[in-house]
Length: 201
Image 1 (spheres, rainbow, N blue to C red):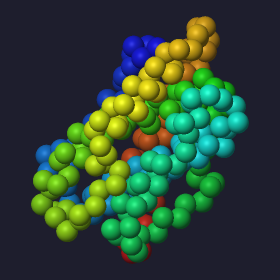
Image 2 (image 1 turned 60 degrees about the vertical axis):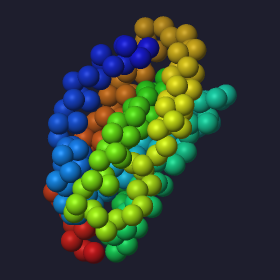
Image 3 (image 1 turned 30 degrees about the vertical axis):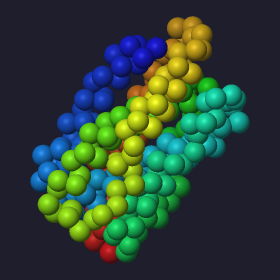
Image 4 (image 1 turned 120 degrees about the horizontal axis):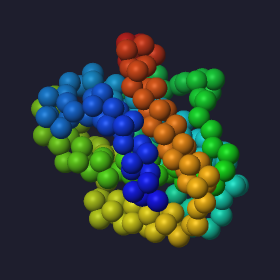
């Protein structure tokens, strides 16, 4: 399943990586304003996806339930408290992402759980960013690498334990793609709604 999903989402994943403000963290040149935008992009992306999964958690049972919640968006919200006057409200009308089957939930979780591995790389660079020197707490990106790796391994073992027919595999892949598109949506909004939220602070 992992190889299948990686292949199916490769193009979208790379496109989002190339357009991400994370590149300025990786080269340690990110400005405080762009860091705010980056946090906002991620906050609303994770919040929309996690909310949809949580709303449909009655569909699944067993160990998958351990991966359902708003822990990622909550951590990003804590990071945004460094910029306390930013408006974090967003109408639910903005939210269009939904999951309606176990397979669709697996596809969405595959993306957001897998993203935490990449967050470890970003987390290593954040303390080196001179423009962020006044920020001492990084709740989302500075997770314990051992815990993140253990969680990903557990999730991987769970989804590998399912038997999928081709239609179900396609459902998982299409949901993963829609999850990436949700992240891309907020990347593209960075010049409009997200900037407005910062400028009102």
